[in-house]
Image (cartoon, rainbow, N blue to C red):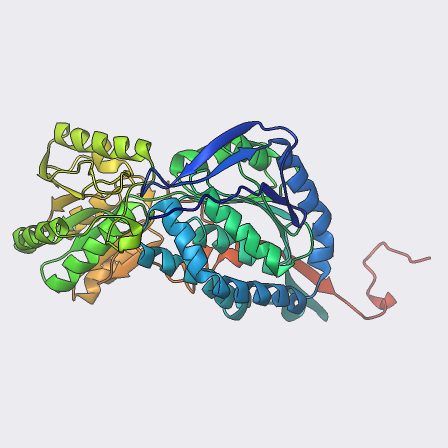
Length: 501
């Protein structure tokens, strides 16, 4: 393909793209799908963290004072632009992440859909409510007001959809935004900001700054930031928590990955269970926080499932995003090294290698790997392989015919994002609802993929009880309680010992 290098525009601050007078760092954005595709070179300035926060702070009160209908108008204009730029955004996502064009297109379409869901569904969760006689003859009012300046830290795997899932609710409810895209996907971040530029929000309401770890650290640790909305790894989420321990007033919404399990019981629809689990494990090359890492099979169906799952996985197409394969590459060389390292670790930790994951040398030189499957000979809650999020196309297969024991295995990793259960037995599903320490539990459907009309968040190492998606408006607002009494003072009801002069 003939790739076009994209000019780097700088950071988007106070309504315009700006470049710093000096550079504190530089990195190249190279497509993981083809290492000859140098998308752009990013040069960043740490001073821009301060400038972007100042712009957002200045813009906050005027934006918050606008009526909800006025803020909606800006978001509906943005929605039109998201739709108009869907094809361009899909290609940017595909180049930056390497994910197949069909996968990237689905993400690009989700941007406008998020605005629809937020305006038409999620805002109902933070509607003003009047409580007659909250105290005797005094009306109570529950209102939800904006928090202030919100920092949004974006991931690489869904570089448009996931930050957008924080940004839209934040803006609609009256906050201003400073957004840092992942350094793995700056091209998508720049295009996203260009669309905002066209939408003509008031200057400073939305800001975007590029950078690496130090940029993110300065952003989250800044005293003028009122909230941090993050999607990414447990390790980075933990660092954010540590950086803000003394900033107890900041709201933290941390979505931090998973080690998700699919359970297939003996009465399951086998065709559906195999297909859905293949999709759960290998879609987006396993780079989904809700992807399927572990599969627990009932003994009666384990042999059949394993054989058919293996044969199906072997036939998955892998290649360049423009050829619309099922799987693209991993995000970078470090991810490939980690993936290969965990293959060896699984073998050392008493797992049988049914399908070996290895690097692939394709026509387009990129970070391609094959899917892998390991058969776990014995469950070990202390096994590094069995409890670590690999973030690649690997599945560990277990056997268990005792549902109580199965649930202990499900809850063993410390993560608690998603579980899937394939069975026709509703009572078994109800038992899983009670016992599974997860925020997402699907019945006869894969672990990955989620609805913006439902909450999205996990327990344990997967998050901090601030679910996103439909519930995002709850962490972008503060509930305000008011007692409102329009009557004159009744002097006959003065408290004992009070004489009014």
